[in-house]
Each structure stands twice: as C-alpha cells, then as structure tokens.
Length: 319
Ligand code: F6P
Image 1: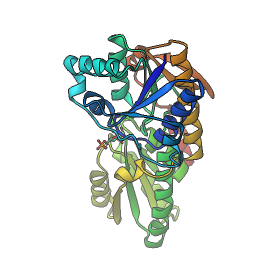
Image 2: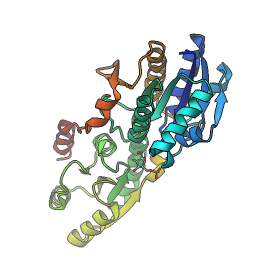
Image 3: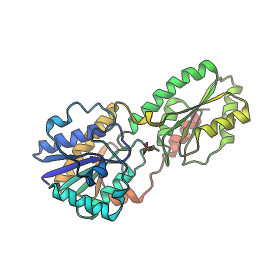
Image 4: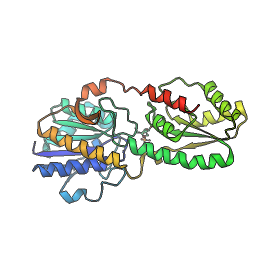
C-alpha cells in the first residue's frame, strides 16, 4: 500500500484519537501517505478527506471522543452507498483503509473489503461486545468513568441511607455493568445476559438491611431493564427510599485511561503493519496480551459471551 485512509465510525470511544495518532505516525514512519476521513462512512460518501502530516495528530493522545468526528450512517448500509464509498476511496488514491469502531463499523469494513478494498478493522466500543478480542478501545475508560460515579453516589447513598440504582450503557451486553459493578461494590448487577430476577435483588437488599446495612447500590445495564422500573419496584415492595441515576453519555466521554491509550497505540500500529503486509478483511484483536489478527467474517458471525465466572464472583462478594 502507498496511501492509507483512516476513519472512526459509530459511537465514539475514548482512545480513538490515540489509535488515529498511532496510524498516522506509524504510517508516515514507513513512508506511507495517510489520509483522514471525517465523519465516518457518512464523510466517506461526501468525500471529506484530510491529508495528514506528523503534526496533524499532535496533542490528541489524551483527548476523549474522536477529533475525526463520527456518525451512524444508514445510507452506507445500502449496496449503492457501499459502491459509491469504494469509488470515492479509489478516486482519492487510497489503497488501504483502517476502520475504527464497533460492530456496525466492522460490518461496514467487511462490506468494503468484499468489494475489493484492502481493509483492516480496529475494535473501539465502550460496550466491549466484539468477539475476536478480549478488549476493545474505550471499555477501560468507560468502566472507570462509571466507577468514579459509583464512588460519588456511594457517599450520598451512605449519608441518606438510601438505595441507589445506577443505569449504565450496554444495549445488548452487560460488560460495563459487570466490571463497574464488581469494582464499585454493587449489591446486585442486572445484565441482559442473565434473566431478570427482582425477587433475588430484593432478597439481597433485605438480607443486607437485616445485618445493619443502611445503603445499597444496584447497577443496571440499559439492555437488562430500565433503572426507573427497578427503583419503582423496590420502593413499592420494600418501602425503602430509592433514587435513580442514569449515567448516559457521561460514560463515553473524558480522557482515555493509560490502558486505553496503550491498547489504541498498539492496535493502530498493528493495523498499519497488516496493511503493509497486504492483509485484508481482518480485525486487530488482543488475546492474552498478544496482538492478533482475526478474520472479520468470523468476528461478525459470533456473539460475544460474557465471562460468567466474574458475574458469579460479584454475587459472592456482595453477600
Ligand atoms: O455502542 C455504544 C453505546 O454507547 C451503547 O452503549 C449505547 O446504547 C449507544 O451507544 C448509544 O448510542 P447513541 O450515542 O447513538 O445514542
């Protein structure tokens, strides 16, 4: 390859900037030209290209969000949209593309690869729901954001002796809820992967109260059920005072953690190496701390399993 393109797509994830920086710097280090595509696949359809130099990515490693901007693009999901995107890449002289994003973005990457473009994906989603990698960029920062919020809520929960329900992101998966719930010391963690059992949530609350516990924290993944509904049911069935906090997009912003910056830098550099080797239709992953390249089709064929032993441990430790 001679001229590589890079775009960020779907929901932003802290660490995306560090990944773009790594791609630009590693690409230039090897004598390649690097072109940024603004606003993801939408920008690709609108030919929003920016030629990068070493200085273009200065001072972004610590910034959350994506300085390239991102979008969720319906038009690109059509065959016509994908053909047009391919043509725009070819007209710009781009012969290798790095797509940074979550599941939807990897579908887009695969589509372009199937039309003949050389494409490598980098997993970046706070949901951490992609297979083929143990970690996606942004997950560590999002979990830390949630734990930071839980710590603060715990102060006020203790002072007022209330039950706090904290709703976190995760439409289909409970990774954020599980990791944040375990590290934040939550009494119960409700995730879409497990059947909702309100009797058990209430049993645990009452068991805690019986041994003198005056406050409780329950973490709910948005895909499990609504935080409001949980709060209302607890209040109705126990008479306890409940408060609900929906963390929302606060989880997705902020400075990426050092772990996310390291992961993003390594994955960005690996993507450039793969393109230089002429590899396509692959996603960079990390398994047992080693960078790997995984087939994009396989990644998208499988559903990511949640580590049930962590879920069980969280329940034991919340006794
Ligand atoms: O996929 C990342 C994510 O933050 C999910 O956890 C959440 O459900 C969704 O994106 C929210 O999407 P949007 O920012 O488009 O509202």
